[in-house]
Image (tube, rainbow, N blue to C red; front, side, top):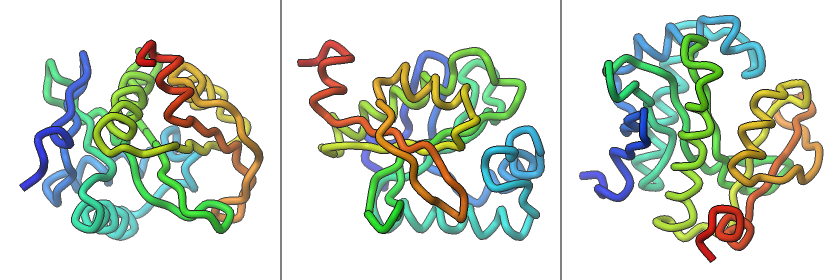
Length: 181
């Protein structure tokens, strides 16, 4: 049973649910789209996507939180995925806030909505002290999302053999930027 403070999460326009095997076709479609995957290590096969989904489900089982499946609240259509997960970045364990949406959902502020709701979850419910986000330095749209949520550029970091821009948000900075101090 998932804690109701953890899942589902709602934003104004998205419903965020714990992933299950039933969403595999949606994830396969998303991971096969070269526009989506251009900054996410490239297109993935159905088999690779199944392995990724298995890791996402296992993360939930192990830590009690993770990446969500995002659906449009109005239509219930799959929009993407994102949330919080424990990762190693530059030999340090971090909690990463990540997000990815299908192209038809780009440019609407939904990534910011998802990221802001997940930051709130991390700080208010999970009691985390800080979160990180990473993206390729050239991914200006993703960097803007991070900055809108309150993340600040920390440094460049190697991840998966490529240089990424690492952004960090600490709980005190989040409280100040969100008016929760």
